[in-house]
Image (cartoon, each protein chain N blue to C red):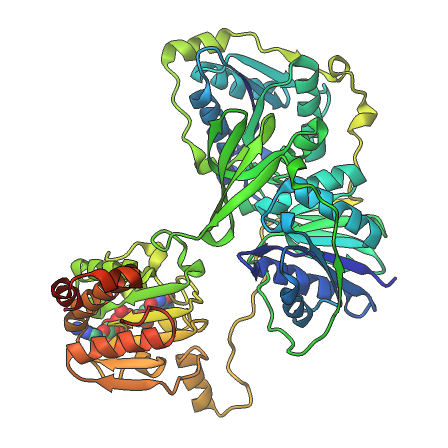
Amino acid sequence: MHIAVCLSRLPDPNTVEVDPLTGAVDASRMLYILNPADAAALERALQLRAPEDRVTALTVGPAEADSILRDALAVGADDVLRVWEEGRTSTRPAVTALLLATALRTTELPDMLLCGTRSLATGSGKVPALIAEYLDWPVVTDIVDFTLQGSMVRFLRRLAKGARSEGEVMLPAVLAVEAGAAALRYAGLPDLMKAKRAAIPVQDLSELGLSPVDLNFPAPTAQATMPPYRRPREIFVPEASLPPHERVLQVMSAGIAQKSGRIVSGSPEQAADQIIAFLADRGFVDRAG
Amino acid sequence: MAPHVLVIAEVEQDRLMPATLECLAEARDMVSGRDGTVQVVLPGFGVTALAETLAEHGADRVTVVEHAALERFSADGWLQALEPVLRDVRPALILAPDSGYGRAWLPRLSARWRMPLVTNCSRAKVIEDGYPEAYRFSHDGRLHERLIWARGVRVGFMMAPDVRGVPAPKRGRQAVIEMVRPMLDPATFRDRTLRTLPPDPRTVDLVDAERIVSGGLGVGSADGMNLLRTLAETLGATLGGTRVAADRGWLPSDRFIGTTGKIVAPKLYIAFGVSGAGQHLAGIGGSQVVIAVNTDGTAPMLKMADLGVVGDLHAIVPILLKKLEALAQGSAAPAALADAVPERELAVAGR
Ligand SMILES: Cc1cc2nc3c(=O)[nH]c(=O)nc-3n(C[C@H](O)[C@H](O)[C@H](O)COP(=O)(O)OP(=O)(O)OC[C@H]3O[C@@H](n4cnc5c(N)ncnc54)[C@H](O)[C@@H]3O)c2cc1C
């Protein structure tokens, strides 16, 4: 089996500093890392690889991105490939996805493509589905765990509010995993030294059979960055028309109305029975008998 | 321009996801004062009853896309079922929750339609007479981006959940409800969901917990808190507490409730040894049913409870635990089996 993994090199969010006045980001302070969800994808690929299998790591990026491909070689990737158009300064998700899909098509289509479900840079989370669209493959996002079952993959997907769902997808497929799906192994020093000297193959647009116009996607007419801003949620404020002492009382109780509930006392045994009867009454536990 | 805004609804376990209602509120704001309309597309199976809730939260029209194959999510299925529907509707703008489901099929549609799709949005708007505008988070929330498109461009916005909150519904508000029954062959879906697993109460975020057992300073010690943890597990509840209890190290710091901690909204909230200070109460206002146990009959927490018990938690909790465990064992045995158990054993089990 041939497993491809998409990696991206991006600034550690902890080093992204935004000027509170201008919204400008100070690029000189940024330190670059491998996207954590991509690292998890790479680890899962390496774990999955049988002796006869092959793992290829790909990235879209300038020459600086070679570093993450070298790291991938050091931990055990068999092949690497970097895709880039010289002179480009950035890519949008659609461009990244098109370049990756085209690179896979022109070199060799894998049996499975693993990637991180979301990056810590743009964080669009669209790249996996877009690659799937360009390859006409199925895609599964937000995967926390999966196992291979013949020509299918059984997966566990994270849903909102702590729930998860279980499902299956036919191979070949794009599997987008969460950062928590695995912790990337460490490379040994000899492997790191060897990877340092490895030649990194690069493909540009012409080798992919693409022209710059293929990378034109509808773009916004204006774009700006600014410091993060939390949208206010509605919170409690005391009723302005009330006399001061009532307002103080409201603030003290955080605006939460007192309930005219039942107050009971008695022996601990009776208290426990009261609580259970109440819980059963409200349907939180099944009644005895 | 009278914009026609379309919202894609998400349903999980027969319930509308709150993120859908947040999108609906955002869509309502977009059309207000512009004479526009809000249409919701609701894919699923046996979900028509939810259209009423959508109407109360601001939908003018609800298009139920119903098919047995849409009972559980499939990216292939959603694309097959919804692409034709959306093409017919020709919305000016599309809003959907930014969820794993949405991110599996909407980007594919956006590629087919060459439609800009903005994910992780904190706000979506239409400025002046028709310029779509979005604010979105990037760099793990360290940066905010603002994007504006040319007038009249159809843009898809995927809204980050839990940002704006769900406003109160307008009871009795009506919408036009229509049914679409697409022709689908589930054998052609390459991905499918087999079942949904509910959250694990032991690890779920307090904010999302359905039941909470909460301990205050009255719990007395880390051991006391551990006893409450056992009680929580027996009730299928999540353990939380007051800030003071967390400060003592009895609870992790992401497990206290109040103005400086988590704001919770469980169906059941049981407080043991919690006095009910304003800073704590501010975090529990969304609780539906509240039980409080306190030795002090004048504690404010008792006044906030549907059932207030004046008593010592150290005496009550162990008895409560025993009784609940006995109950659970009793109800776990099927009735037919219980009938077959010899009388002698029944007497033991019933004790
Ligand atoms: C700026 C600020 C922010 C704060 N933010 C928060 C916050 O976010 N969340 C928060 O919780 N607090 C917060 N606090 C602290 C808050 O003011 C209270 O001090 C705190 O909530 C009280 O915690 P408690 O109920 O556990 O303790 P106490 O107030 O000491 O209450 C203990 C209760 O246990 C009862 N008790 C004792 N023994 C027993 C027994 N054996 N059986 C039954 N009952 C018993 C007592 O009668 C008493 O009512 C904040 C305070 C400040 C100043």
